[in-house]
Image (tube, rainbow, N blue to C red):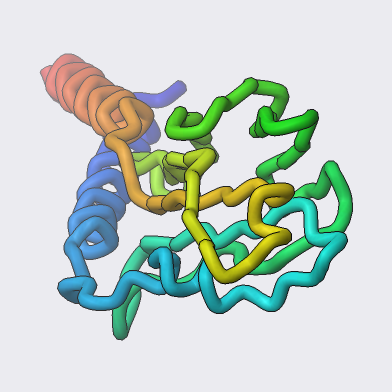
Length: 187
């Protein structure tokens, strides 16, 4: 590779890395303060249940750059013992809840973080799950003892990606190598 190519490629990588870093900073800045919590006990008490309802679930979503508070990741009832809700597999065996094949008794929590690549080399997209097998007392409903209640939160966010630093480092190295070779050619 000619020295001028290394020099120019180094400059291109440094500029690309700097622009991507500026974009990353803009992406991770919080947009709002969240003020609503859609999956409260009231949602479970007001759920449309029937005598054959097996599970009631309400999972809040704290999305990236939300405009007006927390959203709902999933909210519904089912008369089946197993359902798939996006990345979550919810299964019931007796009074035990299985979330993605992890058994939960009443009061226990399933926690999981999923990482996904991002277009920006400085960031990794994350989805953090915190799913709980909860107990709701509904004295007025005789069918409530046969139901499982699933609550929780899903938080979307960012983690730093070392790829951005690698690209910046390669750019600086190529720039220095190209500059050194240019000086040697000039002499």
